[in-house]
Amino acid sequence: MNGETGYIPPRVWTWNEVNGGSFSATNRPIAGPTHEQALPVGEHAFQLYSLATPNGVKVTVLLEELLELGHTEAEYDAWPIRIGEGDQFSSGFVEINPNSRIPALVDYSGCQPLRVFESGSILLHLAEKFGEFLPASSPERIETLNWLFWQMGSAPYLGGGFGHFYAYAPEWMKYPIDRYTMEVKRQLDVLNRRLADNRFLAGDQYTIADIASWPWYGELVAGRRYDAGEFLNVDEYGHVQRWASEINERPAVKRGCMVNRTWGPPDKQLHERHAPSDFTEQVESKRGHDR
Image (cartoon, rainbow, N blue to C red; front, side, top):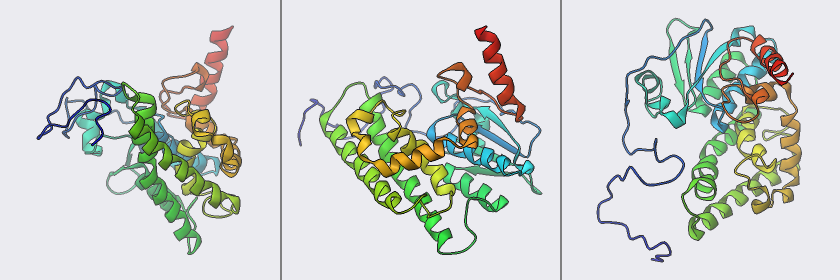
């Protein structure tokens, strides 16, 4: 083995809590809650507990797209889960998602509350419930699910792999950066080839496959993820660029990206969302603050 970092694995790994990196304070090798804390519950049928990471944005974009189409039953309350502060390890959150990862949703619209966790599962649940953004019949339905599950399986290489070692690790290491850069560029090439002959991932229709993939790959080629656009030479993926730009201009996407966002320009943040008017009030509040 190449010991480029000087590290030699022990016979039995043990958890060193002070291991560096941006998420060392919250990463741990065990499951379960660390503290007792109930989650808030608003007035709507859908209660979302999330943060505006790519996986969180998938769900808020879909909910806003459903509302854009006039599905008033899709109204929701969105509560921030501040993962840097360990909110995902509260007893209330772990009860909804034992894996302690955002997003998590509780659907109160039926006879009994349903917990839904994992972003792909939430997208599929909502798309089937409202009959939108998921074609009803094959082959379009199968193609949508193909690309939805492609994204679910591929994104960890982009986020937990490339993103971790390029942007968050305490030091750069050649082997993991080269390994995950090669894989991310292969994924971008997969998308680019698909989008060369198709407006959207499943064909002519905008679906949950696009809603799942855009926050990861669309934001990457737009230069808004990891500040790695030049490093990855994203300009060579012209079809992905075209697809990303079109989705970026959708009003529901713009709103969905604001929900549960707690960083960046103040006018792009909406920490909690409980009604459509929250977006207008946020803009007006920002304008008043700037005067």
